[in-house]
Image 1: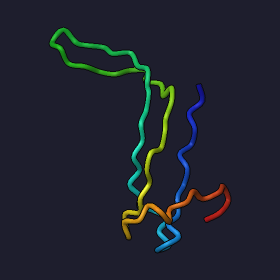
Image 2: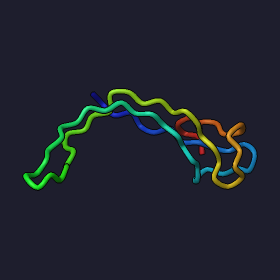
Image 3: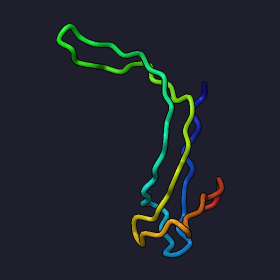
Image 4: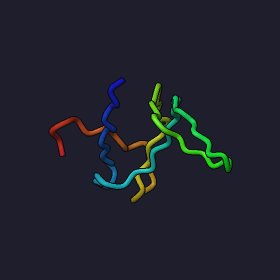
Length: 74
């Protein structure tokens, strides 16, 4: 499975292009490797599904004015 690139966002309210709080839900599959001492290392993790639930601007706090930026815009 090829990982998808994360979208870039822009806040139309304040012009922010760099700081956002993004809430996502992910469904993953991974190989769990435990040491004899019980310490866990997760290897070969694959994202099976990902849903972006909410995006809000870190500068002005709004989520209503945040929009994805099309490739090539900036």
